[in-house]
Image 1: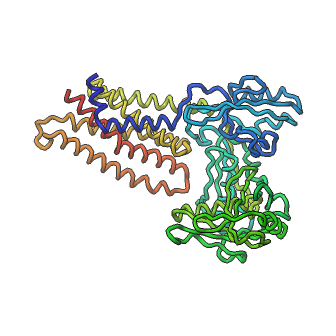
Image 2 (image 1 turned 180 degrees about the vertical axis):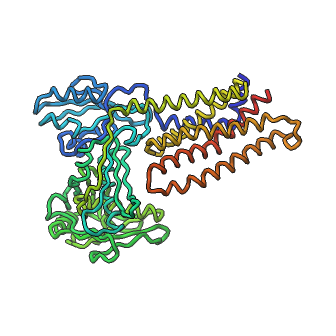
Image 3 (image 1 turned 30 degrees about the vertical axis):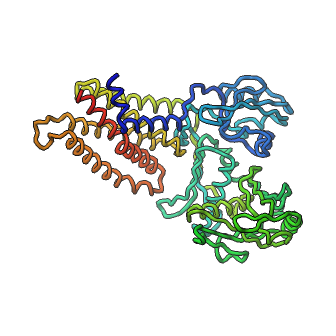
Length: 527
């Protein structure tokens, strides 16, 4: 009891405990994993229409618990029940959404199902309920990876960047978790866009990439632009400064904020529609500027993704060339906002057709067993660590402290991964396992220095011995970081995942767990 009180009075130990609590809240481990978690709902179905129109809160991340009063414990049960349904059935789906950590709000939706195929795995993708908030890569849970390029004889980095932004915006609207989109340079020097979609099958992935997005905008509930109607669409979105319709002005610092602008050309019908709808709106003052009383709401696949204020000088004017402006507190925020707006306004159709260079899929059938094996491997690693520590020091308290510190360090790393929504793939898991060895090495250095006999003159002070241990650890960390930092900028996610988790574990150990371990060990040895 005295040891525990002594530990709890130490601020370094308290900091480690605080970080463990933060990790626990971020991971949100679930005791009950019964049900089927929604990964993707196709907007081209009756259920998808309910979701995109806001008539139900059943969406990505929701956990389906029953269908027509039949309890559902896993996706297979759901699909098996759907197979028994008749066409044109009335279907009630019970589900729950997490509204706060560990707190779920139950709800239900009832709709007419015109065809039972609309609830099969092609249109409604389900997965087992994840026991934590961790996001796993497709090499662990299965999924599809595509490499695409513009289907044109010549393209540049601007074209690739535009395509990447549009595809990223479109997939984010679908709410698919763990999706990764990035521009990659091959060894031959060619650039392409790599798209990774965990838990998504090949057919669904192709549908998501190739399908026409549905973009429309409205003012006060009245549609102004509609990508599905050629007479109501945005004709041009300026992506360069040389565009004739207002051009594009990259973010520049004005009055303490970064402001940007870009022009768009709209159809004559949409311009006249805009003039008619805005002519009856009043004007209001916002931050010293005059705007119309109603914003223009931008919708992508039925989801309201952004609202834009309308300058009062556009009231009742059928302008076909319109300047879109915005701002951000930093250059990066403003640039991100500008690219998002441009991507949304082009999401009705891609600016250039795309060609799929390669596509590969990984089966998800063994994902649960694979994840279980990973955690068994971690447990074995920790058990070996504790055994080696006991054999070396013949002291169960020291072995227990090393075990607790190592487990705490890895738990905090995994919690931070959940907090920042980092996708854990096989290289990331390998980095976590490898970091256990680094953790133990550092703790052995600390232990040996503290236990070193006071008969050596240069180490008579325990503080001096600890400082020497941490000097060695600091040098080791910075040497290790110098090796890992270049891997962050690698075009291969294989290196990035490994570098992130190992460096993060080393940093947490350096700042949190190693100091806590040293103080706990001193209390144990002094006693």
